[in-house]
Length: 149
Image (cartoon, rainbow, N blue to C red; front, side, top):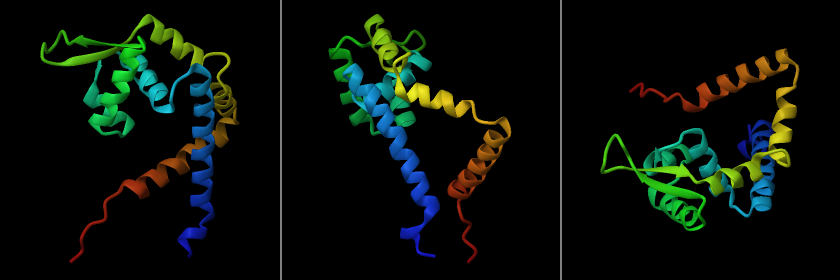
């Protein structure tokens, strides 16, 4: 099988590009980058997240994430707070402006949200079948091969 001409791989790439394009459209409309939008969404879902946790969840380096956070703080969309659990730790929280900006990007005008909602309306059996197949693929992709020597 020629890996470069693999219709399954091509399908995954097309879906990933389509999702990114929809996110970019929403981010652009709100005056954000896709990474900023993703960071704001993650922080909204898990307030008081630390920089390392945020970087890990977005699969970015700490230094890259730090730059993104700095720009969001400078824009007044994010604030750093000293953790109540550990006074040495800094946690991140959306400001009121940040919450409004996130709503602007992901609310009623969001193409991404509209399309995802359409996907959730798929036939329940089709969704269950797709999720089972995705789980099989994830198992194949994430299972480490054992050394049999």
